[in-house]
Length: 252
Ligand code: ADP
Ligand code: MG
Image (cartoon, rainbow, N blue to C red; front, side, top):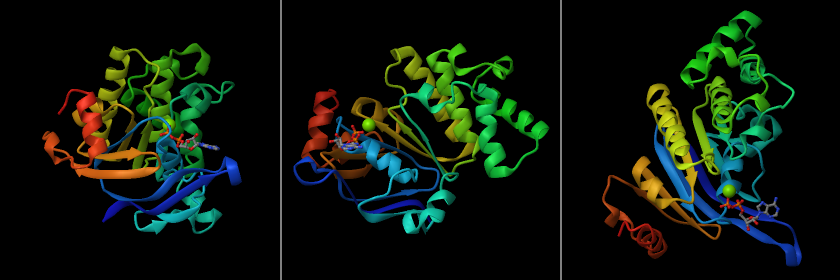
């Protein structure tokens, strides 16, 4: 069964003159454990799509099914999906509570979703730290005492604490220098292989997408242009806009 089905998804912001159509009848599905990349220029609707899949924003039309269940039937079904789909955004510092130690931040989902006791929580938290290449000595630190890359790893550990079926990475390495971007991406790929979650990697970088993902979705101006299974042969892309992106990266 598909882990994710996006059906006729629409989103408009604002009214009248200020009306913006951020998503226009978007349809696609993702299989369990797949690694897909969503590629598109700034403003094409990627973040809107990510937030809706994560249950953070109601659509104007259409539906999203996770594991066969509609997310947006009512507020209760939305809440039920906070655990299944975890979103890592660009700004990890703002995603972490500045007054809470990073250990406590990672433990929060363990408490909320799994009702773990204090000792069990700490044990699991340190396992997640280790999995995400964070030293155990960081447990009692505040986010401000960590580098950007380390904060990102904390955000990843916190997301994994929920044992999500699907992890969305929304331009989450933007702003980092190239070696750090590569390092974090390599780490997330290792984690996906190890844990088997479905990974949705959102980027404006076609060159990166074709290197890492098994399937590529191309977006332009609120419309999904195409979805292709990618095995290394760029001739599988048939949409003209996809070809423009490929040519711009020297891939066609
Ligand atoms: P991307 O992540 O691909 O850059 P977004 O989903 O952030 O795209 O934005 C898609 C479109 O929707 C853009 O035109 C953007 O300006 C608009 N938009 C996004 N969020 C809002 C909002 N909260 N209010 C109004 N317009 C928005
Ligand atoms: Mg965005």
